[in-house]
Structures are given as C-alpha cells and as structure tokens.
Amino acid sequence: MQCIRLNVDCADVCTATGSVATRRSGSNEAVIRAMLEACATACRLCGEECENHAKMHDHCRICAEACRNCEEACRKAMQTMSH
Image 1 (spheres, helix red, strand yellow):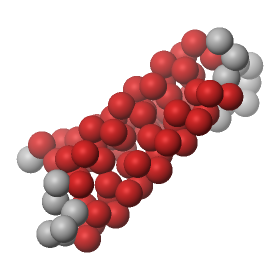
Image 2: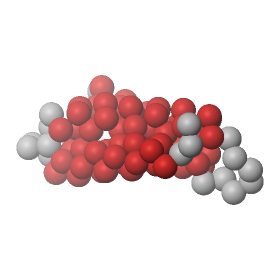
Image 3: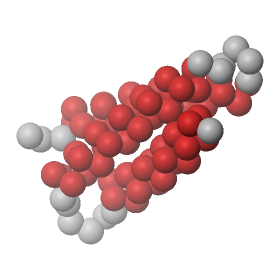
C-alpha cells in the first residue's frame, strides 16, 4: 500500500509543479523553487520505494527510472533559477 500511496502522491505533486512552473503569466520564483524542491523529494521517495520492487515488477522498474529522471530535472531547473 505504501508504494501505491507514494505513486499517487508523487503524480499529484508532479502535476501541480508542472502547472506552476510552466505558467506563462509573470513569475513567482519563490513558489516555483519550493514546488521544484517538493517534486524532487516526492520523486526521490517514490523512486526509492519502487526500486525495492524493480526486480520483481517491470512497472516498478519503469516507475523508479521515471522518478529518478524527474528528480534530476527538478534539481537542474532549480540550479538555473536566480537566488
């Protein structure tokens, strides 16, 4: 059950982060940075959990890989933002 909870939470955080980060009206860097950090954390936790099942289930292996990629993308995006 924890795996499914982390999957759903991660998906919700990723969706919200994408919506906030790609909005084309104005800028709110403090909120975007916070969202990217939350997204990276959610992806890290979800990826770690899915990695535990990756050898048994292909969908968990794919999920873990996607989570690692998204976490990395969030961290790179934060690096491009001014402080």
